[in-house]
Every structure is written in structure tokens, then in C-alpha cells.
Image 1 (cartoon, rainbow, N blue to C red):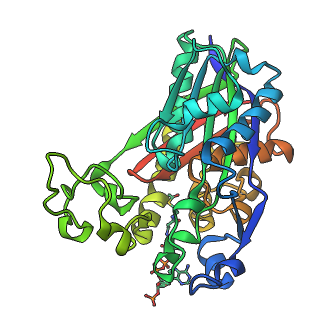
Image 2 (image 1 turned 30 degrees about the vertical axis):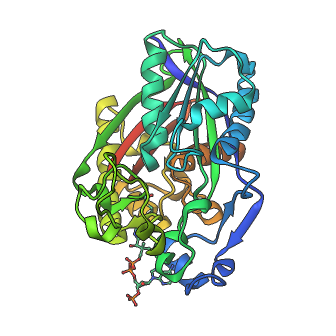
Length: 352
Ligand code: ACO
């Protein structure tokens, strides 16, 4: 039976390290508050004007390709997951193709916009392509450059302290090896609370979902609409917003649910999980999920203290580090799970 295996993994984080203490220069916050509520000690920020989301992704992809032992020109499909793309369009997939120096045009590049769940959504799509025989070397990348879109005033502190920059990548190939590879993936969405963890502006909404006045949409004086208003700039409405308590409540419910769903389908139990790599949203969320599943410390991987929440990049960065640290071995059962903006959530089980 043909399945999808991870042939190579790589990650890249920018050099610039920003500690909680560093952030106190810009906003009213403290190392103690941030560590207690999120577990984060520091995060990395890309070098503005010199690095972008697609260049971070490219650095991670180069390592994954090398570790897979293939040439970049053997990649036959690119999937790029991010919420912080270089441009509104085109997406980062083609920019990464160019940056990698892949000149052949017989490949597709797909952009995924599922925020924290982006890597698992991308993995699920790639898995279908590989199992159907359509592609043999898919490059799946999760990368974020949050630092360019955060509000560094005290008003934005509830969101800003959580996020960091980084990238992770995997090369996915078919395998016929008995019992190995991606065993199952599960994807979910519920748009009811779409605006509760979101970056609303700029966008084409024109106030349709409410708050026409808040965003400054008035008579545009032409047949089209307005993408960015002066009021958005003046009132600091071009940064992400988050209803932290709602996110917490939903996340601690959906993570265990979607992990159980994957285990039930495959007839496996929580005891069978060698390593759970949850999306690194917040250490308190991961601790809650660990407790609710009854997992031991050695069964769960966390690195949020070093990088903060890197959204679509957090799972592949963690996978890459776990492998380097010897926490993932041949035949191990790896469980991936994510919850985030949308809301969307998902899980995957992989026999390594
Ligand atoms: N530094 C200092 N004080 C802060 C900060 C900060 N960075 N941010 C908020 N505060 C203040 C608030 O202003 C508030 O002050 P007040 O009591 O004077 O009004 C106080 O701290 C408590 O604020 P709450 O929002 O009620 O704090 P809460 O205990 O809910 O913690 C947090 C906030 C950490 C965001 C929490 O809700 C949480 O963990 N939510 C989950 C969200 C999350 O992890 N998101 C990750 C990204 S989304 C994802 O990946 C799924």
C-alpha cells in the first residue's frame, strides 16, 4: 500500500533574538507576565529589508532538500503555508521556487492560508497527491515573518508578545514500506468566530461583516471599493487581533478531540504515541492538552520558550529540532495537531 513518508526535514530561524525584557522597551509588559501566561522566554525576528517570509522558507527548504538527498529540480510540487506572505498576491510558493533557483515550469506551487493549521492542511493535501501517484517529491513549507505586522504599542501587547518568526520544511515522497508513513490526517473548520483571531485589514470586506464606521469606509468616489483607509492607519487597525480567552477555551477542547479522532480511526491509543508535536500556540495550552490526554513529559515536544508562536512554521520547526535531539526515531509514532485562526484545526499520525 502506497503511503507518504517524510524523506527530509529542515528548519531555519533568524539570528536576531528578542527577549521578553527587550519588548519592555516598547510596551508595558514584563518577562514574568509573558512567561507565566505563555511559557515564552524569547523569539526570533527576521532582519527587516533583508529577509522575508519566502526567504526564511527557502533556507528551511534547502536543508530539507539536502537531507532528503535529492536535487532541487526533482521537486515536482510546492506547498507553502503562511499567514504573513511577502505580497498580498502572488503567494509565497512561486517566490520560494524562484529563490530556490528551480527554473523548470512543469511544477505547481500551491499557497495555503490556514494559519496555525496550515502545515497540517498542507500535509493532508500533499498526502492525497502522493497516494494518488500524481507527485513523487513534494516540498511542504511553513514559514512566518510575524515581526513585520505586529503592534508594538501597549495596546497590542496581548498579541505581540506571543508571535515570532521562523520556517520549517519537509520533502514528502511515496513509500511502499509496510506500516510506514502518514497513517491518517483530519481537517476541521468552523467560521463562526472568524474575526476573533484575525488580521481584518487590509482586505476586500468594505465593512460588510460589520464595523463600517470603525474601519473608515465611506463614499469611495469611484465604482470600486477601498482596500486600506486612512482611519485604519490612524487608529492602528492594521495589526492582528485575538480574543485570547476564547482561543484558549476552544483550543483545549479541539486539540484532544482531533487527536482522539486520528487515534480512533487507526485503532491506536494515547499510549502508542511516541511523540506529540502540538502546534506551539502557548505552553499552557500544550500542558492542558498533555494532561487531558494523560501523556507523559517524554511524549510531548515543546520549544515555544525559544521561538514563541510561529504559526504555520511551528510544527515543522519542532519536528526538525525533535529529530536533531534524537526525540524521533525510526518506527516511532508521531502525532501532529494544530488549532488556530478560522477557527481551523487538524491532526496527523505518522509512522516514521
Ligand atoms: N503584558 C502584560 N500585561 C498584559 C499583556 C502583556 N503582554 N497582555 C495583556 N495584559 C493584561 C491585560 O491588559 C489585562 O489587564 P487588566 O486586568 O488590567 O485589564 C490582564 O493582563 C489580563 O488580561 P487577559 O487577556 O484577561 O489575560 P489572560 O489571563 O486571558 O491571558 C492570554 C491572556 C495569555 C492571551 C490568554 O488568554 C491565553 O493564553 N489565550 C490563548 C491565546 C493564545 O495562546 N494564542 C496563541 C495564538 S493563536 C493560536 O496559535 C491558536
